[in-house]
Length: 375
Image (cartoon, rainbow, N blue to C red; front, side, top):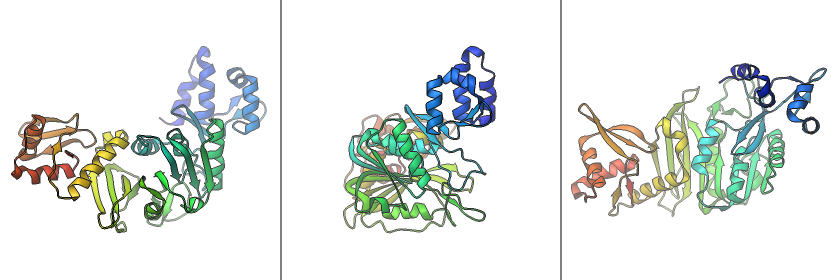
């Protein structure tokens, strides 16, 4: 919903609802409001505090406006800049849909010592990670972003989050983290002024590749990095000799035609590294959890060893037919057509039957696509 439509609806709220509608127009839509009703809605003391802090500004006689956009994310009040085609080149990005996708997939299942949000923007991921880590760090090359992230930490009373300004991993050189989350800009810069929050280089993937290459040197031995990106088809290859990399891909296209993806990076023993991609259904993209990521990593790691395996069907998997075609509906992969052999294998496993040796190759192929899990 656009701000214009949202603001129109809020303006039509009855007088009894106006106490809630007015702050929403201020902080979600960037509307200017008369100071007197703003004081009545917010309370004069709070209004004065907001003006003193710069969260609100006077804009003419007896009018106030909010220069920042506010989002409520898991009970955190997070302020950021409004982003549009005319936004300042160093405007600061706040929480968005893809931020939620990355955090849901990367939020550690158990508390960790140290977490890093690389390219933190307004600090959304840093402050969310702070609830799951002893220390959470956010870095950004934009000094304005670091200042706004610190402000958001102060507003929300979060004391275990720290922020530093600098390029890539330089502000945390020599440190290692249990979790690294990053959503670097990945749009190509062709002409006009480059925007810090949007452009990742001439190709678009230069910054994301730097994040990927630097992750191993800043991960603890059992650490995990997740990088949200949209790779061009001719992306640069990297060596995975001592890394296991699981690339989760979906068919959600960016405006430049690239597909959204998340690269999960962990350490592997020297010479035991691998790269594997799994397609995730678009309607499941925001439902990928860290536990499911671990299950996918475990399956692919076991498949790399070529050892005897036991296959299991992920909970929630359903087989059905439409005409002569068999379909599988499962968490993460969504609904996909399957051949008769795969359908029979899944049916056998759901019935608790052992697979014949001749069925193992087909079961392995299904596991590589995320349809089965290996244990």
